[in-house]
Amino acid sequence: MTQREAIFPADRHALYEKHGYSAAIRSGDLLFVSGQVGSRPDGTPEPDFESQVRLAFENLKATLSAAGATLDDIVDVTSFHTDPENQFGTIMAVKQEMFSKPPYPNWTAIGVNWLAGFDFEIKVIARIPAGH
Image 1: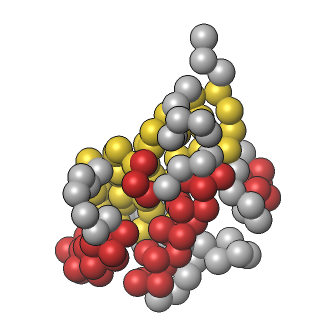
Image 2: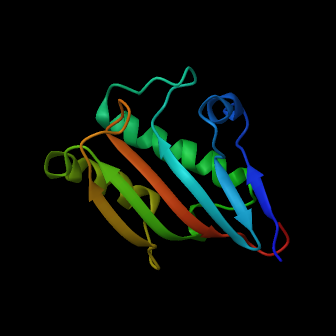
């Protein structure tokens, strides 16, 4: 039976302890990453929306890196948006920078009415490269 291993990025471990969840769980060669938001080091939301989206991706990259993975290893994305109609242009521009060439990961976008003070959240499943 495959053991689950909790993965935490550097400098953010206290955030997860405070709320009682892991940044990611490794199971075999799969990495299941919890929703990442554009939180500043003190845990508060980045107020500028585009900066919040970019910071969410930076936090995602840090979590992936802690497991030896990168954005290129992502196979499935779910993103959550508080105002999809008005936010989508900004999100798509940042997404194009982060995933600039095929093959693109699967992606499901969901409109929600609450994200604990945030306006964007991204959770992924990635395959960890051999040897990590």
